[in-house]
Image (cartoon, rainbow, N blue to C red; front, side):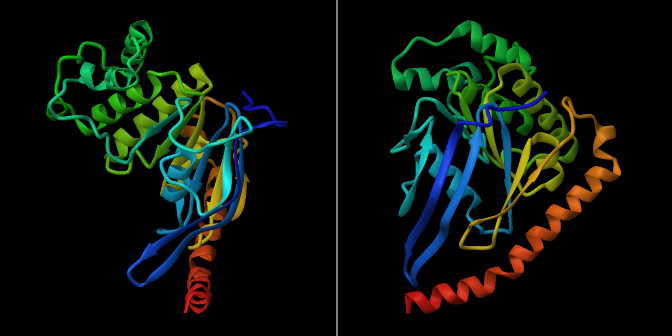
Length: 272
């Protein structure tokens, strides 16, 4: 299965820059970062720690404003949180005093619209949470909480789903299970997904493309196409082709990390 319309990007990041004011001076997190994400595509973003991956994702969501450049959804600049963009955080962020059903329906309360109960019920069944609606977050495992967070994000039928390393705290078996679940949901919904991860293997399993950011300030260093057919099996992930692609991405990240210190030095010189 191929993804996306090659002509018109669903999301366009156009020369995005982000400067944070800190006690020790301005911190340039993103520097003229540009990226297109096609409709129905899964794009993973990887890079050295602190390279601005989360800053970029939150800017895509409209929760963080940019210092320069712009991000467009279907050709329209994003100026704030957008109803057509869903976001799954690193933590599930379920309200502890609400049961699972109430947590999932919370966005509908915020928007003062009627919940799409058939769709929510379908999603709960799809992720294996059918019958857990009366459970509170403390009664759910970490994997179950993240499944609930995915249902909450998808319940409003967004055309874009942004995922900020949502499975990093899970054990390896549960993480693989969640990766397969994301792929299955994508095959069903064709939602455009941008996925932040530190795991190259996870990025390859999930993505049509893997985008590597340079060391801070974050820029797009290189993009890698992932040519393997979906659905992807564990057997495919054990092939030499995947091994070679993993090493190529890893070497690009290592090179970006080595380049981060000279970039940081130049930045300090500009701000002093």
